[in-house]
Image (cartoon, rainbow, N blue to C red):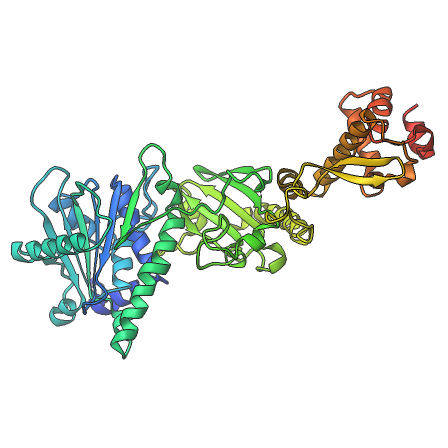
Length: 502
């Protein structure tokens, strides 16, 4: 009896499969960012993206000065896929599936070529994936470029490099990726619409996207990455401008996560950023996005920003929480637990981490709401007169003019703005004490009854006293140095507070 197994040939149609692989949700800027990942992993510190939108079919060049590839390495990296998503990755390897370059390229073009040479070598090798060739031959084949084709592509790159402004001196590319034709833009019926759409995508969306996605590499003090897109050198945009003292941080949380760990850190933007964000070149938003666009989770993997804006399914966006941003840092050794997709545009948070994420997001958004509803506090106007801008201002009383700290003084205004509700209450107490002390020295102060002191009405006054006692301050100290300095008559304190201070 025969043990032969009946089988059916299921070899996929190459062009169909490639078109399916290409549909991974890539935008043009996301596809370019995926190619840049490979350049960064190859130790590049200069990357150039060049495209002439006046010549069709459109041709895009992405060149880097990284390690480059030998012919064997190039053949390996042009395979589908070139590495296992389960494999161990170097700490700074930004790859994931071994599909990035191919999937990203085929999401934008039907033919792409990679020229490469090892660092220090003279001659390039070239390989091309071409859907038309696959359709014609019905075979899963990569085209090997001849020397004339390689020379022609290098010449075209050099010509563009010289035509655009902002050249990088002594730039010698070791890998050049060429997209021959950008089919999504060539679908426009009118020529001027095609050029206009491509120009907007390159000049506006792509430069903005790369500036935020790679901002940690662009800001690296030891060896900053340079990315040039046509005439522009990409400026980094850090969504967490910690140099701004008014940006408030919540206490971070860190959890073990597979062979890596995950760090959650919440940030509250100051309420004045709502107005600031309407100005060009502000610290809080990129030129073409609003605070609402940029609220939410920012997930970094090996220093590369994967996704940003939106809450990744945890909660819904809302104007009242537009001042909240959550920074999440992970390594690249827990990808299988995070379910990162090919386009690096979506992350599925594992069920056993959802609770930790949601709990932290609740605390973060609660603080963001408070800050949002505090935005009605009058802000210092930089056009006001010198008199109004003074740190101490005069107010009139029955004992003559008194001095008090001016809440509209810029530094004090910014300090108040950076505090949460509890911190503001304590700051108001300190300001009251300073005002009282100044006027006692000037002999223009009269103590007031407890019930007339506004600061004790609007704060958890008893809680502040208890807090001082917990930190070792004596009852005498509190009576002499807090109650007295607030300018309150001791005998007018409520009975419960008097008893507590006996």
